[in-house]
Image 1 (cartoon, rainbow, N blue to C red):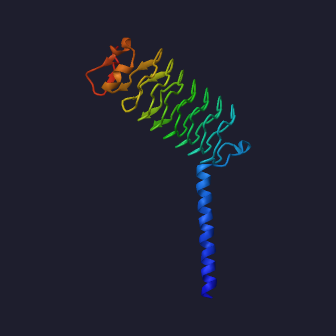
Image 2 (cartoon, rainbow, N blue to C red):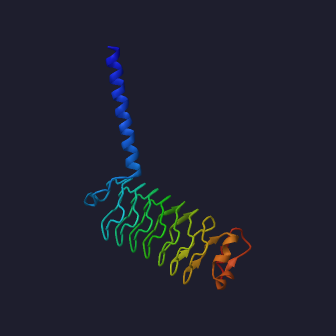
Image 3 (cartoon, one colour):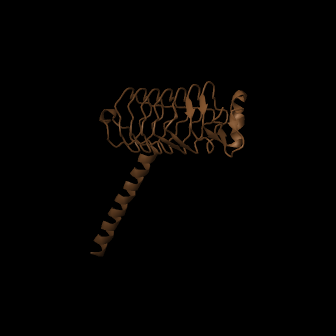
Length: 213
């Protein structure tokens, strides 16, 4: 009886061990997701879609949290209300995509193309936009908290009323950018074109855009 009990316990422990190994393998090398299953509202948390072509797709309210979305083509896709929390969108193409109300907290957009994307009513918090293409993006109605925009391209974008004081903007491109009523830190002044510096209000800390100019 005791011998059978030990054998049973051994089998259970072996099963648990194998399950643990499979879980680790799924994390290290996640299974690719069948993109034909992508419908509005489905959960794709943690899946791998590296390099998939989702151009123009209706992907509203899909849960992409913690997903590997590197180099995915989302051009023109409807991603309204989608959950990208903690997802990796490095090198992804989001040109002209609809990201209204999307949850993008902690998501990585390193080297991503967001040209003309609609990011209205999103919260940019702890995101990485290093070398990202943000040309023509309207940042009104967007809350920005501690993001990394190092070497990001903001050309022709609209930055009215945004707060960049807690974000990294070193070597970012602000050519032809609409800057008004925004807030930056004293240390960030050097990253803006000299012709624009005179429009800032240096009597406040953090520095704010001079509304009277």
